[in-house]
Structure formats: structure tokens, C-alpha cells
Picture (cartoon, rainbow, N blue to C red):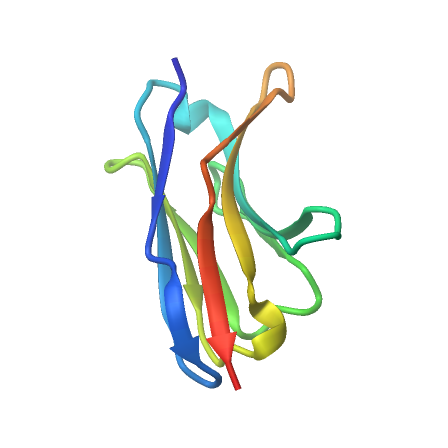
Length: 117
């Protein structure tokens, strides 16, 4: 069974930082692409950042230069360091694990990030 447990969301002022964490309780972390997505009410979920097992990263244009994704295989954990936060970053952030062998996605429960102006 694949479980993803997120933490680190909250309320923060614009310009400040937050770090999200997502821990996978299972055995396929090393066989999966990891990522963070976000969603606001009435809009589609959008990719924020992804990281491969080899450490290759991809970012949405809106967060490039401000957010950093990383993964720690020893801890089965993926992180999203968010700096210089903006009110438009307010959303529910979801951790995603994608199995390489069949591209099946698992999702965490989501964590709210609210950035006040």
C-alpha cells in the first residue's frame, strides 16, 4: 500500500518561506518520480515541481527561481522549499508519486498554504 503523508503547510506573509515535506511509507520511492502539485478552488490541479530518482528537476514557470524540490531516498521523503512566497501561491499543495513502470499516480491528502499580502 502506498501512503504519502504531507506536512509543513500554513499561513505566512508574502515574501516569507515555507518548507513542505512528504514521506512515503512503502517500498517504491526509489522507483518513482516525485512531485508537488497545487490546486485552488474552481481551477485544475497544476504541476509545481517534479524530481526524478536521478535528481533531475522540472518547475512551473511561475515558481522557477523561488521554489526548490529535493528528495532524500534514505528517508523516503520529498521536500518543497518555497521562498519569496506570493499571495498567488495560495493553494492546497499535493504530493504526488508516479510509478515509473506504469505511470500510475498516488496522491497525498493535501496541505493548505496561505500567503497573506
